[in-house]
Amino acid sequence: MWSCGVIMYLLITGRLPFKGQSKEETMEAVKKKEVDYSDECWKTVGAEGRELVTRLLDRNPATRLKSHEALVHPWFNKFSSQARDEAIIHPLRNLKNFKAQCVLQKAVLTYIASQLSDPNEELKYSAMFKVIDKSKSGQVTEKDLYEGFMKVYNNEGLAKQESTHVLRKADINGNGVIDYTGTLSCITLIEFLIANMSQDKQLNEQILQKAFDFYDEDQNGYITIDELKSVFGSLYTEKEIRNIMGEVDLNGDNRICFSEFKKMMSAELSKSKLKSAWSVM
Image (cartoon, rainbow, N blue to C red; front, top):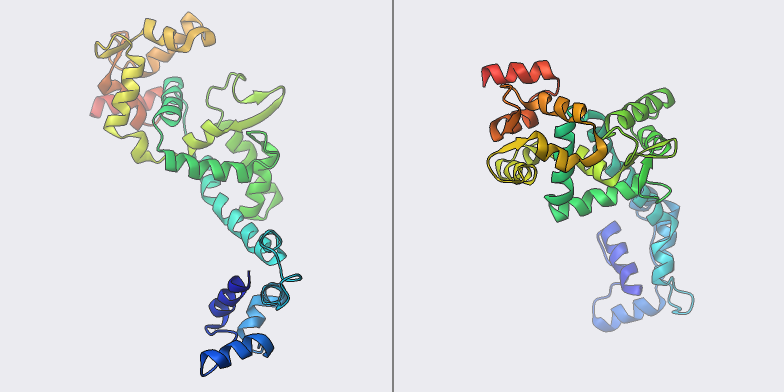
């Protein structure tokens, strides 16, 4: 821990705390010289930073700061808290901008996020999710979102508005099975990953083909009503399954080809806009 103190002093001031013309003089300075904190830079570092370095450079090993004590020192906590606040701003904005209205597109995004996501990206956003998930329950509630957006906007009304808005848009299946516990709305990790998935990832040809193949169970190049029933199970009625098909089946042949599948993933998600996309592509 003494070495950590020396390195911190060097990083802050640009010079070593103890220095001599020879090795002997340097060792003598280590034993007897008082550490100089007169540089202007210590005013920026503040009292907490100076106190941390002073305790690391304590000549008495018995009273010198231990590693576990240093890790929870107020000076570190202050900056790690700031870093956490800055880290969650980007994913919160992604949640705000997330758009998905077509049932099948939501299901496909869920499959991509859960089965085809990059492990490093998943670790990154999992860590961010845990920062926002104050209760560590594995679910981000409206209260969690409100506290997060307060850090972004510092405005109670806007934070409340955005947290409600995000929660409504990020509800992937909208049926209360995954996204709600009792009457408490919440966002799960998989929904968080989906909202933060890059558009390049969502529209990557190879990834889309793997997702399409998952739904195309007989691998004949088309997703049929029966295959949608197989995937969605009892979540939807026969009529609802046919409506899901109708949202994407742009030429009305009661099946979804890969071209329609890609258009669904890239177009705006109202049926009229999908129809318009079909007419110009």
